[in-house]
Length: 193
Figure (cartoon, rainbow, N blue to C red):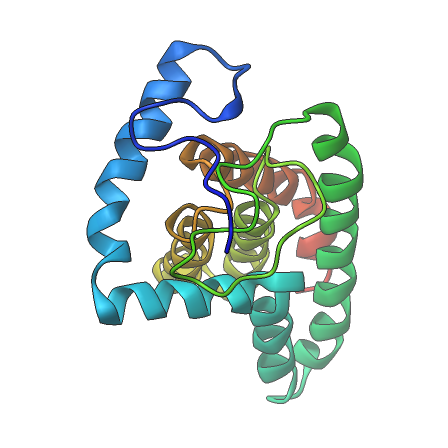
């Protein structure tokens, strides 16, 4: 059984590093997410999204599916996986080492069977890779596809707060990092269109 580090009414150890406003934001969002956690269909959907976000699996599958349509998308699939790998390395072995924030629980909420990450909580790597991937795909496929890719990114990223592997602020920060890295990579991405 996983230990919940902090309850609805007290702060988790390691939180507080970002101040009382962030702690309050995390607490309010966590309380709101209880509705999702207690809904049988929604909770399973977010648990599945969390699993699909592990190692950017869902994004690699999207890249492969796009690549199977042929043309430039085949070469984009390879580049996409390489870009996802570089983004993951930068966030998980770079940015996360700067911030040693504890997770809200030691291995996720007991109601969910999720992998326990070895890295620190801040920022969410799932959220970062999801928004990075959505930025890349929107750059290639055009703005009309943005709701699809960013919608999927929102589900994958927020799943981490639902299963209590991340604080909500970790997810927000991860999304910001992913967007920033995606925008920085746009010159490379555009050459692969």
